[in-house]
Image 1 (cartoon, rainbow, N blue to C red):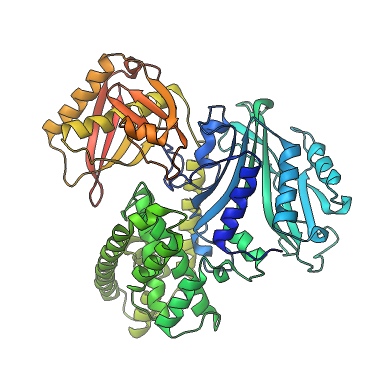
Image 2: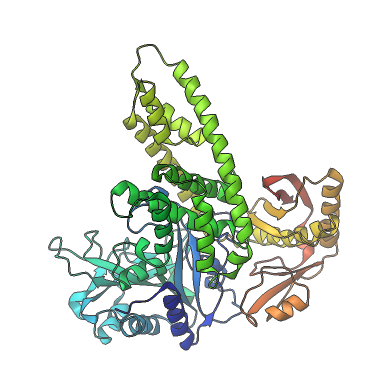
Length: 595
């Protein structure tokens, strides 16, 4: 295996697929564009859904990138050897161009020739077939022709070798996954890459989107067949370099070293220290990227801001366990900015914002601890005389409502002569997790992108709203800070220091409706970033000079966007603002409808 740094692996991967005529595209924001179904960009394919569904991508039909992602469903698992809330996904795509044969051939070349994995330890899995879709013999035959022996080609069921659809209907298909045999003994006669015994480590995955799942549950062949290949950067670095955990890679080692200096403790010396350092390092990295994102998330009590606040405060809580000051987070954040500034330059541009937000949240958390202490004293004062156990449900309420750490509750309870009902706390926590996970799954089941006509109209309305705000408020520095669209309403976040007056809101409505009444055609042009800038287009400009982008002109709005949109402004109906309020510090939120 070839030992590489993170910078070397990113470059090797992009250069490889660039040599196969793939256009290198920038990572999208961690905040999905106009997608109400999920809080964060969770996979490399997420920003490309419109193009996987058939819309033309301005860079062509072969793409490659390194996409930053955040997944928080397993937040409580962070601290083990592999879980991270933030990660980078190496990805390549064919949008209706090449299919299984080329995808598999190139994956084989990348893994065995470029990355130098041992071909004698290489194994693959393919879809075994079921009543809906046939066994994927085509993929298996591709692997055989490349020299993979039959006893290292495993046919697995839909649970292991099938992707999608993201919602109840949509594109889906079989996948083929690549593994390395670690040499560990088999866990049983049926041991395969489907096992969790650790004998096989996944190193890559190719999804073949060749079917469409219909509303009645049947499957139809897709007109445009796509390939989505993904490889996790952190995981790949860990395997290539022979590390026992992702925290030993160069993406974390410098942060861990600084925590050792600050705490005087040694990483790996004991489980408590190791877990605390991993959690602080992971959560601070994720917070750095969310705070420094091109769509600028801030800590709050809703949506992305709530998750960000939870990550920061969890990291601060573990700083206390480790015995270091909360200011360790700002030190680590600066180190992460230096580490990633070349790969993601906007992180360096937003460094001071990252630090100031972390410092502000640190001060707020100190107040939270103070409030929690007062609440704890109130609870103790009302516990029945003779009671010796502090209720677990009450301890969880302190954590859930006030953010008060369970470790502090346990310490305080002990000081007052109470044993903590840890079993009751764990059950309350587990019940809460189950509800949260069910809610998250329900949110995701809506599909990654609702391309319906009403959604497209509301999307067009957000462009008009963005332009109208600049005019009505006489502020060209106003920028979109987030957008969330359902079939019923739009929600638009933008930077502005104060609430809007009723007169200002009325003027925004008037300007938007004036453009709608003109019934002008919505036009789209493909052009370079330089041309888009020269024409005054609004949007997040890529760092790659000359990359082709789509520019939509909608009335008095000209904006870089991927679509979809209405055909004419007259289709929008009447625009009405239903609410304006604060989203977070320095960010306002407008909710509006089309009637």
